[in-house]
Amino acid sequence: MSVHLHWFLPTGGDGRTLVDRHAYTDGGVKRSRIAPVSGVRAPDIDYLTQIAKAAEQLGFEAVLTPTGTWCEDAWLTTVALAQHTERLKFLVAFRPGVISPVLAAQMAATYQRITRGRLLLNVVTGGDSTEQRRFGDHLDHDRRYARTDEFLSVVRGVWSGQPFDFDGEHYQVEGGLTALPPDPLPEIFFGGSSAAAGPVAARHTDVYLTWGEPPEQVKQKIDWIRALAEKEGRTVRFGIRLHTISRDSSAEAWATANRLLDDLSPETVAAAQEALGRSESVGQQRMLALHGGSRDDLEISPNLWAGVGLVRGGAGTALVGSHSDVADRIEEYHALGVEHFVLSGYPHLEEAYWFGEGVIPNLAARGLLPRIPASPLIRPAVGGAPLLVAGGR
Image (cartoon, rainbow, N blue to C red; front, side, top):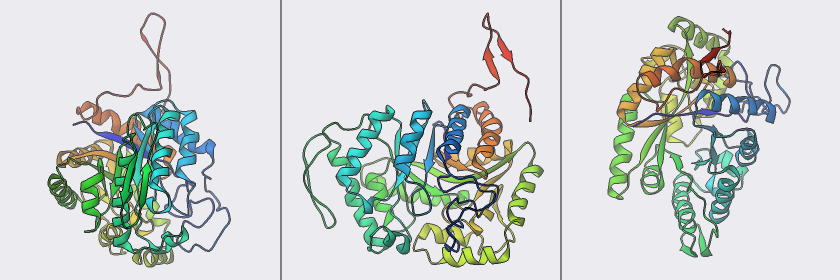
């Protein structure tokens, strides 16, 4: 079982701190400013192309794009980036409650043809009612998951290429059809820690994603979803969403983490914790419980740092350490059954290189990757011998 490595596209903006990186708002903490922030890299196509090309060159398989009010639309952004890359896949996050499932199935089919099979789907049911209402969705938490269950049933039904009927509580479809189904079918990624989410994952998910909890908690989730999937006669694979701070030495990595922490004022942390505490997402509450809003004891498991979650919603933990340390932790999660690692770091361009040049060769040497990606510093010379181009950091 090889490791699949994915990176993240910061379509809400990027920067060198954990907050104020969004180009159009203050990162969603106060949600009161609609103005550019000093030092922020706007998520324009030129900057996102740099990240996408770097990810492809370094050996990442795909890039994840977020979905929501504070970022660019994932479908439109990634199909544009597909024109600037060759092999990179796009893990497109979208909300099933705000789009017709038949239209989504058709969009996925078109996307596969345009990109020659480079689409992966990340289904985001949504854990924040305030955010959902912005998109016209007024269902409560559990009913949103029930609707996602029906949504994915319809999507898979119309991908059969035959007229498909469905009569559910949330969707009624007569003769739903994708005349030219996607080839290959996009893999469906899905996350959710609540009792309502588990059965949906078991019935429909190809890859179940969890945020970066300590290994023992991740194992409990894997066991839970695996048991539910077995009852459905299915096999589900597993992935994890983490940030990374990987450096040539452990001391250098932890110094970077501490710098990120020093940038956070008590007021910023308090405001973020208040906003995140209102989330209905069970996964979000589990993230908050890892640190309790405190700056103390943020290394909650070896090399697993919860500092990101003090101000960031969603994935709130980072693997911090030397390249070998980070590879050790990935190998530990992999031994539990995690195949897909969806990673990110601040800023995303630089951190992609730190991970790609430091950790990826380490993982390949351990046999966890099918091959070591070709270095951009090596070019074939006349006669077949490699030409080493001088360079350094």
